[in-house]
Image (cartoon, rainbow, N blue to C red):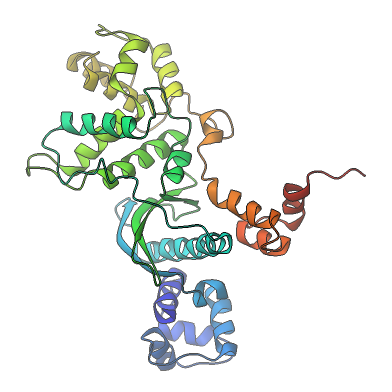
Length: 360
């Protein structure tokens, strides 16, 4: 466990064994570091403190043993993403998960039941089947056809861990299952970058939900990612509701209509245009013309973006971990100092969160 954490932290820092050995105080050889990473030797407490300092990480990350493995890791990344970038993401995520599980244990929370047991499928045979599955998930979860206020909140309510973090520029997210030490169940995890806009974040979360529901396709002709994208679009923008909003069949739509719809459903303008095509409201020729003219820049520059802190931009944040920390604090299961460490906020802000503003 310690060896793997050391290796990830070293790669995150972009250091070779020799370069790390030169930075550690007290001195330690590259050969000893190699043995630490392969779990052939265990560093002394003094060396461990020096390693944490040299690697820019915490002792909690190096020593905690809640996270046994990140299983089936899939990065959402641009080409050219380095091994150091991927290691940095794994280190950030593992450290955040250690805190998450520590608070859940303090509160004595039980393991979540599988929220996808009734809707998961081994394969879909068509894009239309992927769309129907999105409707089934909404029905199973009693969501109705309205727009979803918060994809983060929905996934957290269904037992999926959602982490938003400052990731390397070329990585927009990650998905995997988390194996905890001494536990049999694997917990689904979705990680999104704090730098991506709300529209992209919501679609990414719906896409990852699709991966939890759809395991594969019935033929090589139907690409899994394409089926998952169709699921995500249908989940965020249900066909029946969209038809009620804008009509069954249109010869065109105004830019003002697209703006209203994208803000209502919380998707990008280009995704909204494609959804109008998928539902059959607009024809292929109309959508193709739009992407050659009015919408030609929409895939690279979002028109009238959803603003952070306003409407959906305010709702689309993971909240569960912070709620659990304040619950543990209110029940005197952790101290204010520990709470501040866990949620990375000033102690003064945590005190206000606990007791409210105090009069002068």
